[in-house]
Length: 160
Image (cartoon, rainbow, N blue to C red):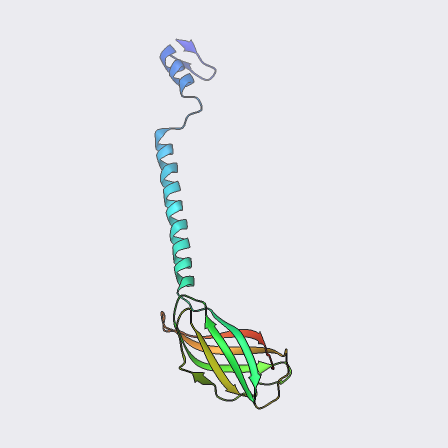
């Protein structure tokens, strides 16, 4: 029998104890591996759900805004991955003050497919100047979810 610092043990257990020094028990290795797999699965699920919900939305942008003969012509483009149906457009400009615009006329229809553009003609009751900063509130229906959404789109007016 050999005398250890803490207890008396045989030569076999002393050799075995020296060999296992610094290694982890097998059950602990299994538990750590399972925890890593579960955490990786949770991260993948989180990334998939947030990405898929972000992709199923239209992204609208005003590419052109011209003021000609009492009408404001807006070109609205859909950069998103889903079609949109525009129901209302309200425009307010810094120089004109409160929204002083009439009912929009769509050319050709209020449907805005993904990757497409739409010209909206809005009668204006006040005079606009070149370079006026304006904001359009575009209310549309997301065709993927059926939800009605209102987006604020900023733009500057061009007077030819």
